Length: 276
Ligand code: AMP
Ligand code: ZN
Ligand code: FE
Ligand code: FE
Image (cartoon, protein in one colour):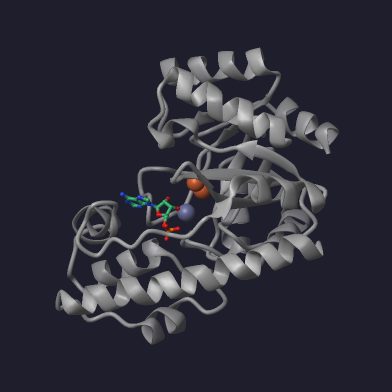
């Protein structure tokens, strides 16, 4: 019997390991009822995922994950039921892509100065049509034997504070949320514990994004324990936000997270649909 929904899943349209069809097949095998495809800064995998979903009888929710700036912190906003053709969203994604390109090139240059032989050409060849990010560079470093895991590539080279770290230029929060709304989508604050905010700070963020049109908050997340989830569920209820569940499945870059690890209630999908 099918059980549960996962509203935060990546494919190789961004930094997930697998093709959209493969991700949909894995989600079907895991017995999920519905899955949202939420690749970083692009919607390139959505059509294929939805086609595969129709074929395999799995409900696919079209989504996206945007990186927004909040007081210098990178905050992720999920957008559900967006129209991938919406012009103002496409314009925004084009700018995000250009910023990523510049940053990736800078990271690669810094790595080369450390004696690590990686190049943009190699990355593009390995991941055609993909929005490239640090995980792709980390994978390449791993395959070439410079590190043992993507995690190590972040810790020792590309993560914040490491020697080849390059900050990302993120779009203003207001713009991320409003372009999701313009595209007919439902904005949701992703993984709230990632931002290292204390309770009053998190409340401030929630109030801000809610005021900008955010309708939900990701409360059940693969890496959050029961206590953390309950704290977020209580906050969502207090602020009248839809509580969502997502694994942030990526495949190889996050090998400890599998599809089926998170199973939110189907009612979340209905709530998101109604919030459109
Ligand atoms: P980027 O978009 O290029 O800044 O890369 C961010 C992505 O890297 C996010 O999707 C994270 O899931 C992933 N990430 C961040 N930190 C780590 C880490 N320590 N190990 C593996 N992946 C990470
Ligand atoms: Zn990612
Ligand atoms: Fe994220
Ligand atoms: Fe994600």
